[in-house]
Amino acid sequence: MRRFLLLPLLMAVSSFVLAQNAGSTPAVITIPVVVHVLYNNAQQNISDAQIRSQLDVLNKDYSGTNADRSQTPAYFANLAADCGFQFKLASQDPDGLATNGIVRKYTSIQYFSNDDRAKSATNGGDAAWNRDQYLNIWVCNLTGGLLGYTSAVGCAAEKDGVVISYTAFGTMGTATAPFNGGRTATHEIGHWLNLRHLWGDTYCGDDGVDDTPQQRASNRGTPTGERFTCGNTAHGDMYMNFMDLTDDASMHLFTLGQRQRMRALFASGGARQALLSTPALQQPSALVKAIPSVAETTLPSSFMVVYPNPASETIVVDINTKEAVSGKLVIFNAAGQPVLSQQFNSNHAVVSISQLPAGIYYLRQGNTGSFVKFMKR
Ligand code: ARG
Ligand code: ZN
Ligand code: CA
Picture 1 (spheres, rainbow, N blue to C red):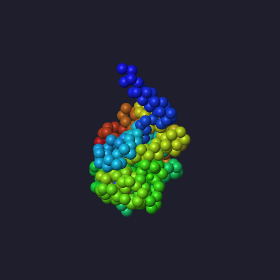
Picture 2 (cartoon, helix red, strand yellow):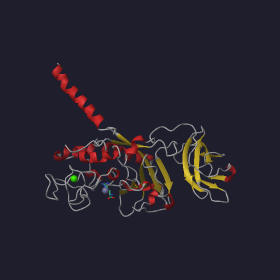
Picture 3 (tube, protein in one colour):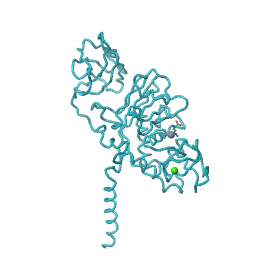
Picture 4 (tube, rainbow, N blue to C red):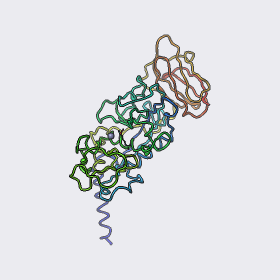
């Protein structure tokens, strides 16, 4: 009897010790996400359901539970990893207010590119939330067939995150074949987690990962069989890896080596370690909170005009002062809970209220001061 018990017991003890030695990195790292939807027309203002369909793909791909993993050829199957990441839309915004993790913003920009305007409010985009607390994803109309792009690890904080075309985000709505499998975000977040393209971006280059075979360049489309390109690998290119450029339906794994490289960012001193202690996924207090670091003057409600009223999609807020004022608007529901906050500039704001349930709301400028009542229908 003892002999049967001893081996599992030893294994349990040693894996416990291993987990302890691995330091504070949790087995599953949960990344809070904010999605900034930048839309120039109604179609680009993708639905919550489409956004959730993207989160579902990420959660499968980064835990190795995606159904198409069964397609991994036998000779690569032992390298495929459960990377131990999960992604959740934030429930608390940088001010500690409730959020659904989705920011919707009308933009006059018709086409974005990889020039980072998407990340700048003064250039028609929306500013990043603190990268130590959130993964920022901007979804917008990218021009020139670009599906997505990602900042380099260690870039300036306000540029940190991934930008993805609304035609390649999620698996429904505006997502368009052959890039409607949600793999653009899987790929770009791989970069955000420090992965390189398999070919190291040079001819038979190095991606810094030992268990991904060398390959000459990117693969596209839907390759089949073994594809030898550098002449030094047993089974050719791993074109089904998320860090190649094949179609969504043709990519389905990260390797154990890639897992290790991504998770190293969360070890002590790693570039993304701070995310392990983010408050972004905690439930915000239901009470009205003072909002820190807002330095604007507080105006009586008679200086604020809100129209149309009632409104269903957006309200326009004009603040009638001689001098230009900028600051923060906060919308409270009838129970006095803050439900939305938005920056305004030069006495003017257009606030999307499409996500709010119908009812009576109160709008306040700044931390204190009077409320303006409006109705959402
Ligand atoms: N940055 C790459 C591009 O824009 C992303 C490719 C993602 N590949 C995919 N099958 N979704 O081309
Ligand atoms: Zn890439
Ligand atoms: Ca390699």
